[in-house]
Amino acid sequence: MDWTDRRERLRSIIAAARCIYPGSVFDPISARIAEDLGFEAGMFAGSIASFTVLGAPDIVMLTLTEFAQQAYRINRAGKLPLLVDADHGYGNALNVKRTVEELETAGVAGLTIEDTVLPTSYGATAPALIPIAEGVGKLKAALAGRQDKRLVIVGRTSAMAISGVGDTIARLKAYEEAGVDMLFMAGVKTRAQLDTVAAAVRLPLFLGSPGAELYDLDYLSARNVRICLQGHLPFMAAVNAVHETLKALRDGNAPASIKSVASPDLMKQVTRQTDYSKWSRDFLDAGFSGG
Image 1 (tube, one colour):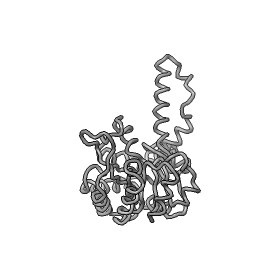
Image 2 (cartoon, one colour):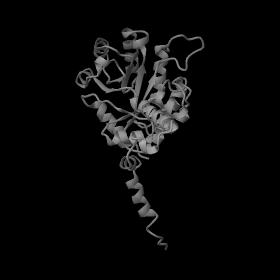
Image 3 (cartoon, helix red, strand yellow):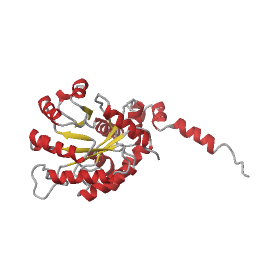
């Protein structure tokens, strides 16, 4: 498939002087819903991938192959530019290079590589960060693995919540110098923190589920933030809906009494039934006209 258009659209979003909230998606239908509702981009998080694919907590049990396969399923179902959280790149710098190659092939429009020590080391009692030099090496490997220059490579750090503002700025400046396209911060809670970082770096910023006082698109846009996550509520809501529906049925409620389900029209829309009906007419009902 040709992924050019969606990557160019993501580049346009990042280049514009405004911030967007991407839709958190986890499978083909959730991505189609986000696209139908007008979201300009989708976000597939590592934690949500672990929940969706393995039913496991966010402790880096998922493999690169499993993650890339789910990203591809999402991408082939629609045209929404997809950002993905590639965690630590599934290993060292050489693994990062391969991660970029696999995710580029899977059609993602942008991906983040972070500097957290993952998976958790033996005896660790708190999150830790890899050395800045190692983070730079990973990002240089990511850039070397990229074949389509339209693919957005994002350097990510969780330093704000671990080692503070000063280390966050030092890391982001180093990642900026490495040549990435964008900078991601997790753990930003206050406007003072964001103001300080925004004044110190040049590249567009990407925020991961920040503090409540930061959810103001005008303010974020003025601080060079171009993408801001709103958490991953759609998957959590889906889990709750499945739980409540199954519980109601198990408790003896009649199927007709379950009201909070998708309508037939909505199901037709999200499964693209009109398209499949047309293809069936074109390719199955046209008859055979052999030469």
